[in-house]
Picture 1 (cartoon, rainbow over the protein chains, first blue to last red):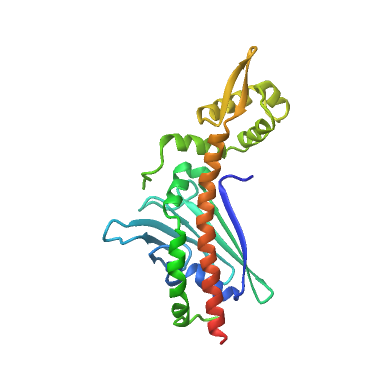
Picture 2 (picture 1 turned 45 degrees about the vertical axis):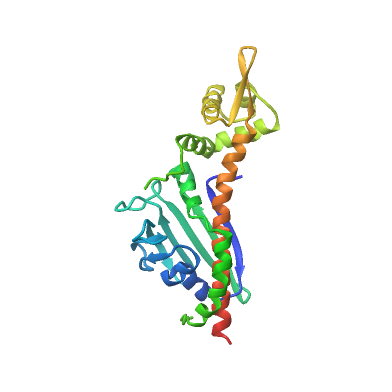
Length: 153
Length: 115
């Protein structure tokens, strides 16, 4: 058992180009994770994601893009202290690797850094855990939203 | 940024379990209680190194010691180990929910583009 790394793999019935957009573009990321996301999809871009309303007690969390190679790899570091450069030891590293598979894409996800960062990072992540109810609320909004999208393959 | 839900003891717990040798020791102790001597016979490290690791695990509450002759006999504290495992599992399940959304969004876009 590897403690300190989260690894997942899933098959998505969509092209790597579409999946890359969904995991990297802040417009899409807002639909599956934070309430707001501000960064450029370019290596080294320092930005932030926001949980809740930033004007009313929401949490603003730093995010720095590490790698952006469409449609193969997107990775970023997050949870580093605002104003600090994201490095190993002060942040969690999230990586999405996309591989074409049949008519779809195999998505490999990893999040590392818990061992270096200590327990606090895990507790922090838990704070941002999605509630199952949120998913039920989210689904009905998804189809009309997707219909408005124009993704360049 | 600091997390209001993290306590000091949790940091000890996490770093205790983060070391590969200590995880191997926990695996061995889960199979049956042991002393620094018996553990060092099953690991490529010295008895002194094992004793230090046992101290760290003990401070984190992951093992408990009972006197056994001139040595101490250690066994795993199941409740504390379960607590550590549950914490990481909850982080993993948060990502499971996010990844399910990624899948649904991407597949919906794909269908919309080709309809």
